[in-house]
Length: 65
Image (cartoon, rainbow, N blue to C red; front, top):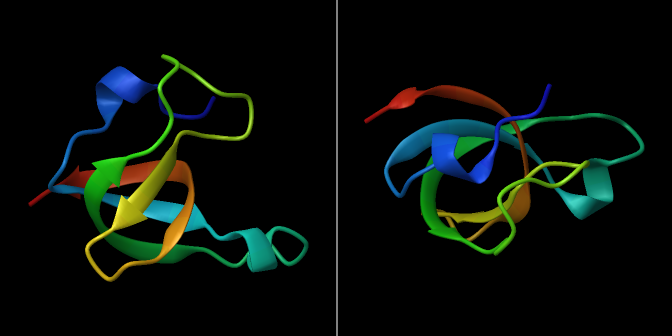
């Protein structure tokens, strides 16, 4: 099951799938800067912006920085 919005906060380390990686399943690790999805859950993952500027949907929470 994908993490919900309450599991994700700015500063959380996550693995995201970016739009261009959806077909390959390549994941990008980074630290959450902003949460872009307003709803408490989303079937494809909560959309976030990482501190690096990359945007994608959270597939897994790695930890808290």
